[in-house]
Image 1 (cartoon, rainbow, N blue to C red):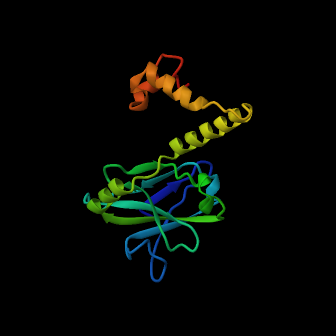
Image 2: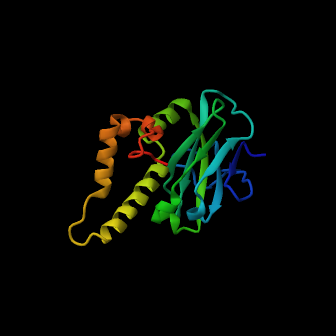
Image 3: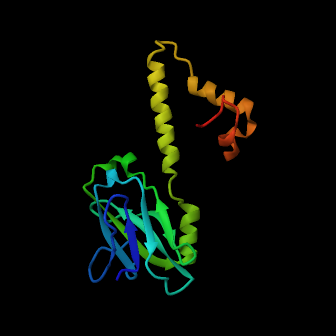
Length: 188
């Protein structure tokens, strides 16, 4: 039985297989690695990685990575530990042409020290995919509205943002703005 499991909504649960012999390693690590294939990565919006049993030590965790063909470079995605035995990841592969067009992505799990994983979380945090998606939707809406304006386009999104910021100074800096009752800034 694998030490890890992977769930992609709408697909069967996967159990990564342990890397042995001459299989491609995740970065510079050579032991304590598991890999599984994810088909059609552009269709995957979320996935869950979890421990099926506790790790041998609380001083280590599992780094989660992905790679596209030729499977030599691995991108860090997240971490699971005994204290946090599962993680929901939103990889954003549909927004990345170099991944979206691939028929398969390899998901790798590597046992690493807690210090190494903590450093990776601090220096290369997982991307905020939902924020990027919202930014692209807003930009698309802006361009659509702009197309009706002719040559003298008004910066409607900038005006909206400035109006929200003036009604609620915390709008730019906190999540409390999302709960605002001011209809000029409501996120609903």
